[in-house]
Amino acid sequence: FWREDALSNLKDILAQYHRQGKKVAKKIIEEISRDIEHIKKCPYHGYIESSMAGQPQKVCFYFSSKQIKILYYAENDSLHIIDFWES
Image (cartoon, rainbow, N blue to C red; front, side, top):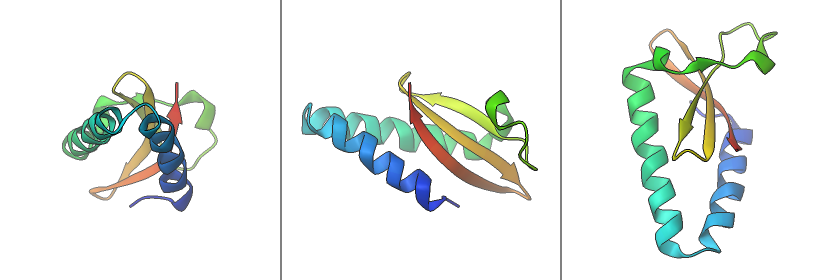
């Protein structure tokens, strides 16, 4: 499951990379897709996001392509993508 804000932020980030070239944007998309699949299989490999400590779920983060932080939580065998932050 993806929050609408997460999808919107990802689109904004990818638009920035697209300006650098289609190959760059495509590489970022492939890396994010691969990393999300990895998170689905091993959701507890990420680190706890301390800035979201007040959330009812344990929010974690995982760096994709060393530039994009994927914020998520796992619940009942489902992965919930909360947001994407560019680092």
